[in-house]
Image (cartoon, rainbow, N blue to C red; front, side, top):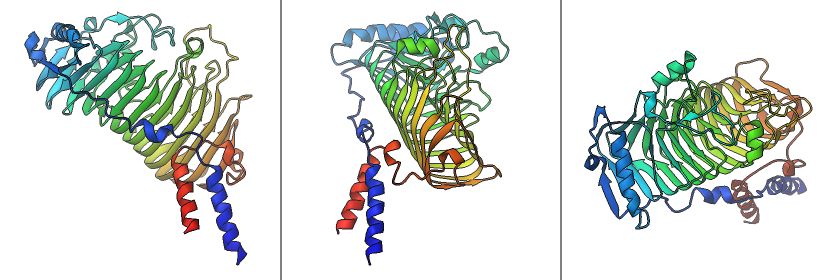
Length: 461
């Protein structure tokens, strides 16, 4: 008669000992809507823009935004882009602005590289990501801004990136390719209800930003298009990404924080990042951290994820010389279909910006929790490769069931962690039981508080 109560007690202890240390993830995406009602509005056509897909409208966008700047301290303004195909080069946003694309409105990036000015490299990278020196400015750009909204009625921003992809593949680039949207040193950013197509490089790049929300966007590029990442939060904090569909030629989401000695010196981490209800496919990674992570990445919470027809689902990329850290990562409720590798850690990934990096700057990778995962037609459950002399530790796997094709489902080296209810059975460095002895070694977030509270209530009833 005593055994059931003892068992219940042990189960409760297991749940309770893994209760969360923080609660930010449950509230970050519940902040009030960042979209503002602007008292002033103009249409891009009032500034001579022509939506025929041929006329270059860079000056029209620049003049419209210059005019709207006079309303920045009067509640802000909205720039309305009606249906049409609006060809333009790079243009800058301002604070307290809403850029609104109506249904059937398409902003087209110019195919002339002269319409994408060259700007300085990011200080946390020290050079262009692809080539030494500067980089082309993004199509839609902003820096030192507050309260910026890019939204609409499912309008489209099309980078017409094929000419850039060809130049990259033919080694004829003069500078690093441009992004579609880049906002720097900005706070209070909302990007929503839009489709992004054919970016020359990364699609959405908030860098050195705070309070960023990317919601209900579709991001598309051919799977053969090089480096067309979907959303790349970079040295940014308080970022919420939810209800997105992404299918591109590179990582769907890549969390970054600077490159080798430049990222270490700049020292701005990416932290407090929530990813929810993400669907997509790619020939690289669904959710990646790195490889540029030298400023540190922490407090990342991803849930309700569905990846299919992809190469990697979850991947952490780093190497000697990166320094920095990746810690306190929590991924749950993930469904995988037709995936080559469900989980990949690569401690020997990526090139360096120059020869000045410190090979003794070793990254710290710890407290990575992945739980509640199901997968069909998976080639291999995981390739987890740390760095010799720099083990990745406190890797925690729980309630994972994968239908794996390989006779060798796991390949692990220089990692250490714990597991429970994992099929196929985890590799030897992760085989030590997680519950209940090692709960405190693992990272869990706020939904476990609710689980433990519910369990407690059930036992009392």
